[in-house]
Amino acid sequence: MNGVTSVRADANRRRILDVALAELLRDPDASMDQIARAAGVVRRTVYGHFPSREALVGALVDDAAQAVAEAHRAGREGIDDPAEAVARSIRAIWPIADRYRLLVHLAQRSVTMEGIRARLAPVREVCTELIQEAQDNGEFTSPLPAEALAYVQEQVLFGLMEAVNDGALAPENAARAAVVAVLSVAGHPTKDAERLADSA
Image (cartoon, rainbow, N blue to C red; front, side, top):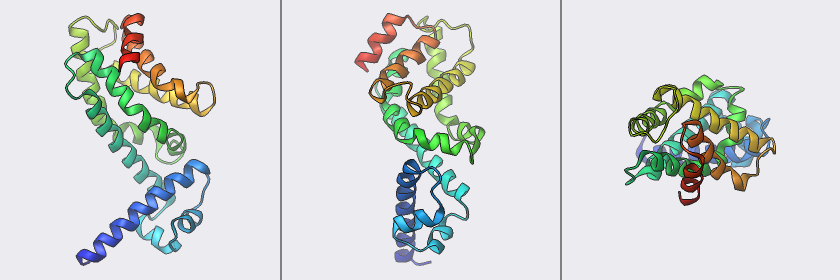
């Protein structure tokens, strides 16, 4: 494959992914045919990049995990205080999570939560370090070890995503709620958690 062909193939793949995300968020049962039509390509082209619908959803989850990791890193950049770093990183990732929250629900049917957790492992490792630092300096008082608490916090975010999906939480309130919930679960004082949520 020459350079021009490779660039065109990469552009086609990116377009298919972008269109597939929009189509699946609009209609979680969208078929590969629907996605191909929406992307303006033939079905064979879609299957050339993604051999199955599950592979396509998996690629979208990979994109989401990468976007979450990049936002998490950007959100905590330059922040020395671990509790503030947690708050700011959650604020930074929530718009990404909100964009992909319906995809997570869809992915649970094909990628499985185990697959999603595996993709988020690098972010969880950083979270564990921040939690440990906050526990060491007394900002977080949860009796759970840092590594376990990182899993709990991750599930809190997934739970809030589902709450928004089901209409139990207004989308415009979700980012603040996520910060307060995660910090509170860690044993951070509620008033301080609310202050960080409002300033993050």
